Length: 223
Image 1: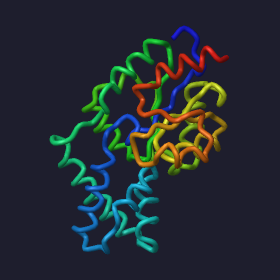
Image 2: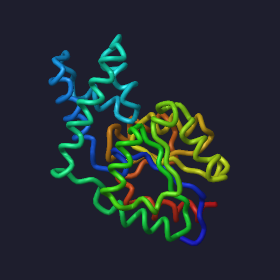
Image 3: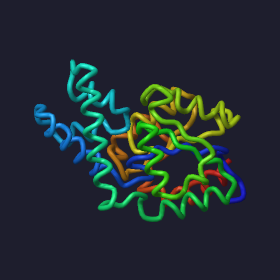
Image 4: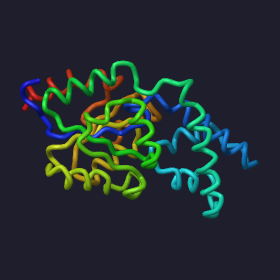
């Protein structure tokens, strides 16, 4: 990859790099059951993945008070932590892909709807922290699709919007990128299908991030 079509690659976390969608749904359902809340369909939960937990609670439980949000957050995180030993984290080949992109000279960053605590815990286990130049979570910026996470990363790393690409698995990632003035690329490993992402006009949609290096090569040849 001699010519880089972008300077900065901004990755979503869950469903893009981390194989966690099923776990998020299961932990949410467990927290809902623990608090004796009304049943929620798995698909409804999947459709909110990508937003911050506060926004997820507001979408799934309209009118929920702040106390309920805080209790749900604590119970959810308890279930999330308890699953660590029994689940995979990175998708197969994702670590090698990140290393390859880093060695090719790309700046790598993360923009996620996770809490800072959740991201730090994941990154400690994954062991790829040194590959990322910067990260933003919902604790430091408004939830996706608000563009603040991307805008803050651009400012911190000194990259123009045209030099950045957002890679994600949800419509919230695509909307965030558009609002920030960057381009976007979908992956179909998470919450939303390529067909669902198409209406947001990403540059493409890949089966997984494993295909990203070759896709970038093809884009570089076209410029």
